[in-house]
Length: 96
Image (tube, rainbow, N blue to C red; front, side, top):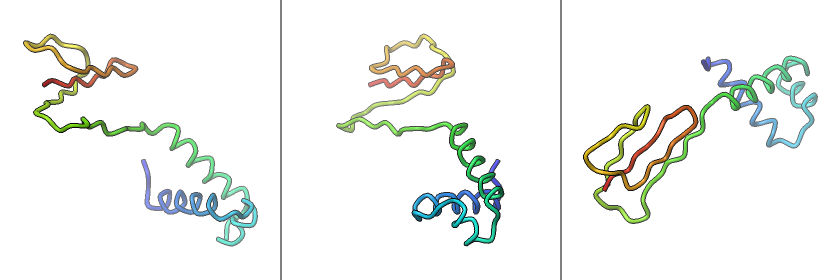
């Protein structure tokens, strides 16, 4: 869970990555020791690795499509046009 402090420090990590400064010099400029700032860099990396990434899908031509999210495949009266199945069994079905 992100706290206000972690959100602020994650923003500082992003700022450092875009600054071109060394980790030590950036940490010093914001009043932290090198090891304390390394802790936040590591925490941000771990948080990024653990957070799911979602990509919005949309049809090229907008039509009367309905989308159903389900935890496993279920039989329905109509067949889906598109079925996207993710690891763990999660799937997205697109019907026309």
